[in-house]
Length: 115
Image (cartoon, rainbow, N blue to C red; front, side):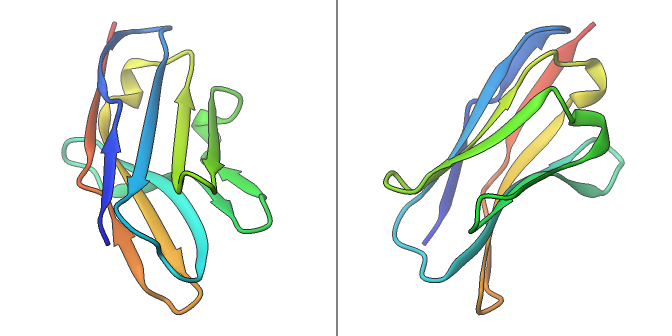
């Protein structure tokens, strides 16, 4: 099973983008789905996550601007990003972890926010 991320692009500061991540097949025992990002020269950091019971977690700098959601029927997880800032520029990776400890990563989608 592979994760396919889409929706990245170039946007001006203050604008919005919606990222989407679809799995190519069924992943058994999904426990957590999320989005990480990696800016040039920096480590990959968790941006937002959602667990099975629907509880979400956000990195402090994106709270109130980003919203993670999932469509269980479509097997997708989305990240709505509003009020984008230049410091949000990064490659965004979708991520899935199962209760068995297996991890899946998407290929990354580039988000560039111009000032």
